[in-house]
Image (cartoon, rainbow, N blue to C red; front, top):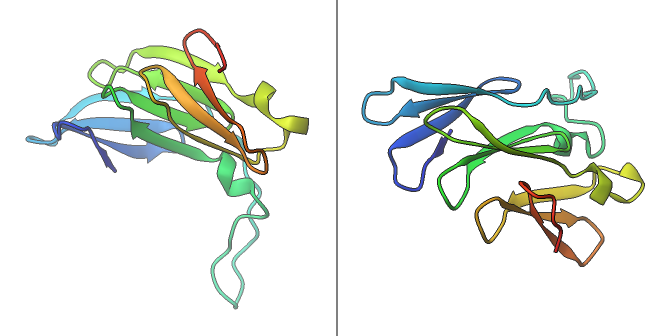
Length: 140
């Protein structure tokens, strides 16, 4: 569950690619966001030694959501980053970070960027932080 910066909205994952946005005061659903389908991840079965953990770095390509600096919702589903209007569920922008990855390897971290519509893309093992405007695709 994630709270908006002003504390009026609460966003929680309802299904593998669905985020429900609720009014904090009433807990009534404001909208439901259906993001891009996350990739299937192969996860080993639990054993008597403990719970199953994702194989290798597979966990990085699941699904995540959070509020950005402007109060919009960002979803990350595999390599697809989407930006949403939290009160209407309207998609505002969509960007595939796949072309930024060397050899298509999923060793990447994605975080809110310094300005609206931007995300920071960090390829692990590479000292360069790329700032991507997800509305235009411009990379700096």
